Picture 1: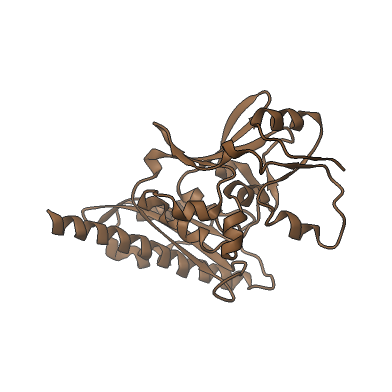
Picture 2: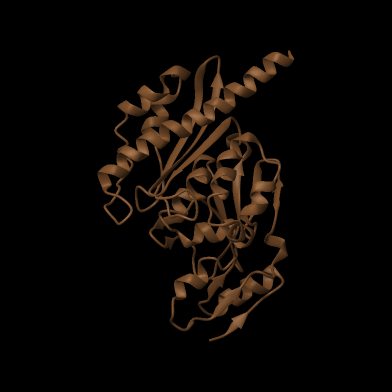
Length: 288
């Protein structure tokens, strides 16, 4: 096997043209998946690419560099719409894992239980994929294709996650259900973002993870919530069929339990987002 640790993005993209590499970012999933077996594939270590770290804004997007750690996300001065992503970041393993693990690594690992995916879906995120031939952008929903499957071509590197500024509005919440409080793979998780206008929901984005091969936006529920009164959140969630979800039975829970759990934590994530939104509105009223 060969090992390469480029320090320039162009060098990394050139290497990706030469052969098939296994990309190493934070390494928090990379090493455990090896188990007791030897490493047989060529490894492209991108930890030397400092250009892929950090969060910045453009005229149209908030951009998270591929190598940005979860701890950096937690500490970043982001709009309240990103609170759900920060809450999810605190659920990514231990603090040590959050310090080392990267946002792009979480997405490329493509686990159905990836904590970062539901919040980023609710933010309408897209991924930036670069190769020696150029750059392309894919909605996150089109990038993750299934369990451990993505749309990244062998000669491409995921270099950034981009959130449209138009989607970085409102307040948000995130709820994760597991067998214990910390260091756990989720049974179900939900992320919600809402924009409130005059006591009604002007905009809602809701996504659920661990209840299908890929985390899903609940478009049916979102449509039902638009224009609904804040007080009707629970009834809207209770009456929605959640047809986008396809949970399975496994050691963490049955499909039936997951579906009911998803319904409950979706309501809680929405209520969490609403509490934050109404708290901000009350604070502004007090200052007026």
